[in-house]
Length: 70
Image (tube, rainbow, N blue to C red; front, side):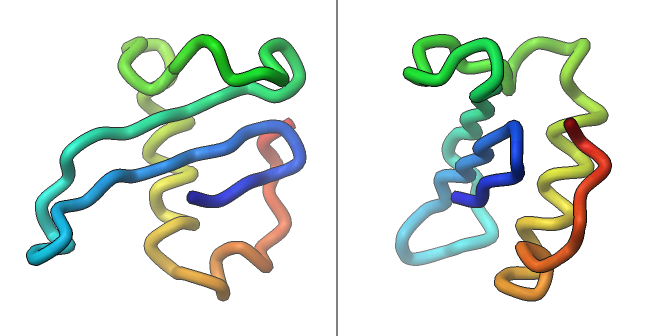
């Protein structure tokens, strides 16, 4: 998982093969602070998921990046 000021992205990968993605979760803490609605599968959020995934793939270095995603 990683968190920006507004979003939390979680990517679930297979334990023995981290290249195999099982599920993705995306929550908007501005509109859904209790994380009740997963936004990751909504096509209108595809670009946001892709951008956050790029940051996530960079590990802790990506987490240090300032995001324009507000």
